[in-house]
Image 1 (cartoon, rainbow, N blue to C red):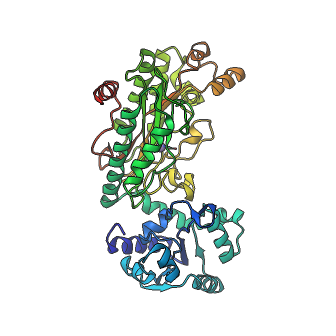
Image 2 (cartoon, rainbow, N blue to C red):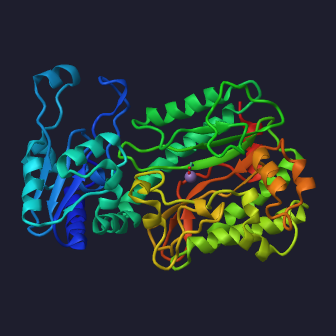
Image 3 (tube, helix red, strand yellow):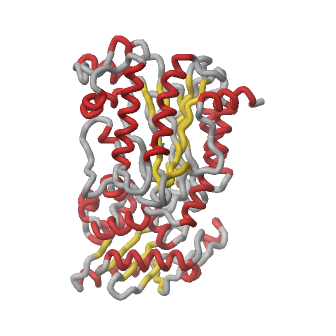
Length: 466
Ligand code: GLY
Ligand code: MN
């Protein structure tokens, strides 16, 4: 367990207060088979379960009676067979004691607890499940078909969990700083390895290994590709080619599952060409803009749109866009180059709490999602508060299929200089990403050491490596 017993006791007390009534059931994760039952993916606990109970073992469920305050940790004690294969582990009674839960029960007791609450006409609160195995367990427990479970999940519980987890405490920020330090090691290693002839797969494997060497894993599947224009381009066995750019988007989780998420785009030859520099410097300036604009009270939606305006102006200077900037941005013309949002919330999930519903996490009554291409992928938009953590990840991509489609359809033709854009179809894509903590009166990047990203720093770093 990462934090003191008191942290978990207080979190559950606040949750109980926010939900107000009924029985709260928080499902821990179970082992998930890879290719046969006994060969499982590396175990990953559910982040909300971890947030309220702090325990990493599979086979646990936490129940909080919001009316009486009674709390129970359910789980089956291990037997001698488990000990023979996996060794001694902490008992359920001990785990409950560690996180300040008064009662324990075997898993079979859950059915009766839920049935009694339902019989008494009390609400059973559960979060939307994202693993099929959890869906089956919920189906057995509540009789709700998996296809209905997202709608049937408790709005009160979803909103309460988001309210608590969205604002990071000082002790959580320390843990996020640890994740950022692993991210620094991963990305500076990738930059050191980035040379002609080395494969994307090799770099991807080293990144994964660094995260694993810290006792956990990557926070999402590492993106390592010379085709930076493919937003989630996974590493291939292709050797890196001189003159091209390598986009590397990767992060780590600490052992307690606090995440980092960084992207760097590195010239494989060690220096940028002038054409690469022209585009790269626009992305740098868009990335740095968030630092001067983001602070409590400002909407991330507005920071995103400030970035879109700056990008449009600079692309106009390069002869790739034209017309009135505001009109172009309102029409979504910039999304040809930036088809995603400026960032997403980050915490114990790299897209924090996305399983609870992205709109609930990133939006509020005042700020509603857009269905326009590009802005529809803005995962976070709400008014910022001290303690929010959000990624700042602008990019410029030249996606041949999208360019062809928009040209053919005439989409935003009054703002796009297609003849000039055609010349960039072999360019690839650039993204620069860091993780931003909203502070009392501004914001700062997480991570004590910056992974180089300004042109001169990157070229100096690459020139100095052995
Ligand atoms: N860094 C990967 C993503 O945000 O989707
Ligand atoms: Mn990201």
